Length: 327
Image 1 (cartoon, rainbow, N blue to C red):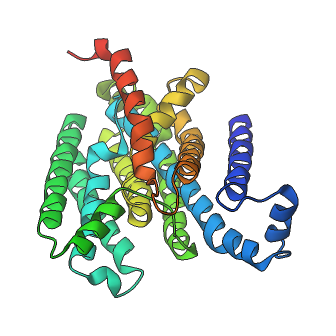
Image 2: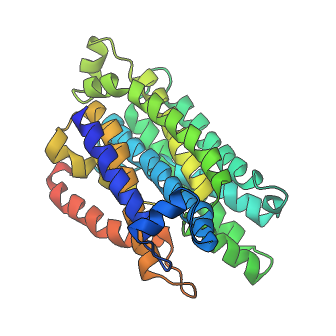
């Protein structure tokens, strides 16, 4: 309860700050006027049509990435696991790139996110097959790595075959990840799926705690690693697939969020899922604010680039910290 209140208060402060800062800043009075549909019409337009959907989308996408990272690190029993390791991010990106490459994305707003979710669904289906019949967790990891590598290669192939520089730039910019210029349509698509995904991941919490003691011990406690894997993969599909579908590829949030909380909440993966959702939302919104403040109209700084620049040193720190755990 206390963690939830702290997380909600932190997101409320960060969200309010995000809404007030930017090229067009808001004083507290101007913020209140815009929130209550009063004052300058231009400020109201920026607030409701640009700032608010961008801020809310960053919160939901970050929450999905954070919760997925905590669940995957618990299921795979690997502190360096990230939502991208199981291939869902890469296959979702491939689906979206295919829609852009073949021009289908121009037909309707819903085509691009639907194609991304379809790509993520393919990865989830393969991983669910690998996770059935009490298969080892190692097979899920290796399957995810193979899917990710194949998807990255096919994405590069489509970029290589792009018919003109404009098509190539459209794909490249989308892959860099951003929540800028998004509307409530993207929010309406992603938010329900993220909430459902976090709920499914939450159902796996007790089983993940048991799995942290080893697969044999978990089975002796009545926990099925296969069923747990199915819950984790399904929840990750909904959280990560929907996030990639509307924002492009954004890395390191799922890796960092659980690690920032472990010193305070302990190492039980089940207890970290919901708090990691709060932490992921906080981190992604902070990264988006940084990208917005450091970039500009002529030289935008993409969100995926920002999270990579901040996350890569953190990942290196984790590798050094856990180097003794690897042969």
